[in-house]
Image (cartoon, rainbow, N blue to C red; front, side):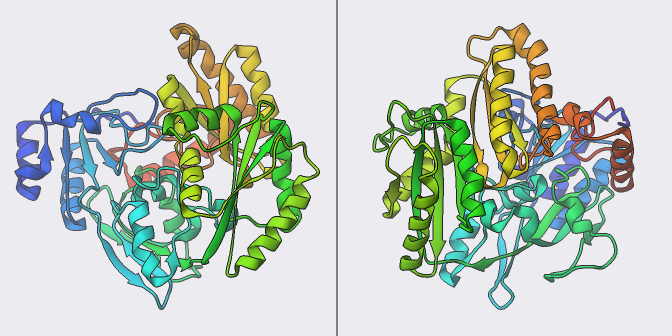
Length: 474
C-alpha cells in the first residue's frame, strides 16, 4: 500500500472545520474524543485528532476536498459497532460521524423502496416501515444500534439472510462523496441494472475506503404477518450443524436458522438474566429456527414437517416453541446478545468464518481440533442457514505472549480450513484493520494489485479510511 506522510491537524485546520460546521459540530479535546477512538473490536484504541458532525452531502464534500488537498486522513464512522476495526482511526486525522445524517428521506410504497441517510439506525428503519406493512430484511445482531451506512460499508448480513439475503441484495443506488469532494450517484433506483460497471456493488463492502456514502436507496418487501420461533436442543454440535442442511434439503425455508453452542447460550442467558430457558445436561448445541407465513395454519404444517426432519437427529429435549411476542423477544435477545455476553466473560477475538452450508459440520469439527492443538477455548455461534459461523476465541488464562504471537497462526489455520472447504475469511463483518493481514490466505498478488489500482482510482492520496482492507505484505 502507498504510504503517504499524513499531515498533523493544526489550529488552522480546526478553524476551517468550524467555519463549515459550526463550533458545536467539531470536537478536538482528547477527553471528548474517547468515544471515537474505539469500536467494538477487541480492546483496540486509536485516537483521532478531531471528530466532525456534518448534516448534509455538501458539508462532507467541502471537508473531503480540504482533507484531500492537505493529505489529512479521514475515517467514516457510524455507530461504532464494527468487529473488524473498520471504524478505528488508525492514522489519527479526522473522524467524520454520520450521527446527524440520520433522516429517512422517503418511503416509496409504490416501488417498494426507501431512501435513507447513512446514520439511520437499522431498527428505526424497521419501525418506520411497519405502518406500511413493509420490511427491510437485513438485521445484524446489533440492529437496535447499528446504522444502515455501516451495514452497507460492511455488506452486513443477519439472521434473515438464510431466506432473504444480505445487505448487498437490498441496495439499489448510493449517493457518494469522493475523496476529491465530487458527489456522484452510483447507479439507478431500478430493480435491474446492466449499465456498464456496477459502482453500487463496488461500494458495498468497501468500508469507507473508496468514498463517503451519504444517501442509500434500499429495496423493501412486504412483511409476512405471522411467525413462530423454535429452540431445538441437540446432544451433539456436529449433529446440529448437519441438521441445518437437512432442513433446507427438505424444502423447509426458515426465515432464520441460527446455531449456538451450549456455552454461547448459557453465557447469554446469564448475561441477560433470563431464566426461562431449560437446558438439559446432555445438550451440546441449539438451533433457533423461525418460521413465517401468511397463514398460521400453514406455519404449523411446516413446523410439523420440520419436526419429522429433526427426528433423524439426537435431540436432548422436546422443541421449545415461542408463540407470544414476550417469549420470542426473550429468545432473540439471547441470540443477539451472545457477542456481548462473551465479551463480558473474557477478552476475546471474533473470527467471522463462512463456508458452503453443507461444509458447516466439518468446519466446526476442525475449529475444535485447532483449538486443542493451540490450547484455546472457542465459543461458536452464527447464521448456520447460510454457512456463516462466528468463532469467539477466549483469552481466559492464556498469557499475553501466546495470545499475541502464537494465536495468529491458529487463526490462519482456521482460515486455511475455510478456504479448503470452499469458503472465505469473512461473511459479514468485513476486513477492516484486524483481518487484512490474513487476506493472502484467500487472495493472490494479482488480486491485491487490482485492489490497489481500484483504491488509487478513487483515492490516489489514500486519505479515506487508510490502512484498512489491503495488507502491508502480499
